[in-house]
Image (cartoon, rainbow, N blue to C red; front, side):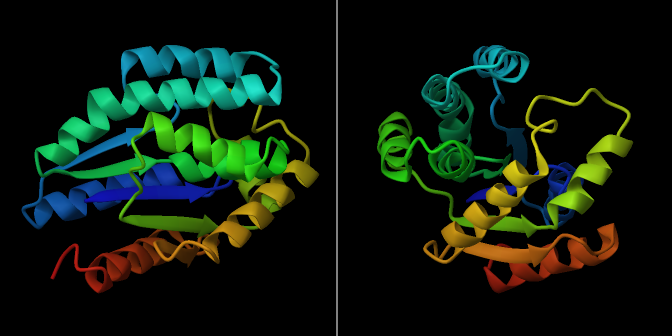
Length: 202
């Protein structure tokens, strides 16, 4: 099963991915966690180019697609073929929202490029962490780590990201929205409940 976590900056995806991995492993399931852009060395190298440089939106779109192709063929597909559960921090929906909608590259163009590079695969389940961007950015500022250029974008940019995800969630049956403003424990409960409803665990 292929599960993706989506949402704006500071929504708490990474924390919950690690909690979910342990929970599923405790149920006897084999799980790998990964992220985009990245997940494998070649894609991580492309990630550095994306995050460390101001680049044209179409260039950005193509770099994300290239990283996703490497990630998909080298890590995601082999794990799924082996019957493992793959949990990925961001996937194609991030490109649709950030580049297709917010950067105005166009949803159709982004979808067409990415469907080709990942052989039309879609996640089985996408958990959308819905959070007021002001709260998310405040969380990011409190982290003991360097902010990337997406973290530094304007509040208006992040508001458009949230709006884009909400629009996308209405057209994707696999999307499940959770309230990411709650405590870590409460968000975990929401996710475990989704796992049960979706049949991932009994």
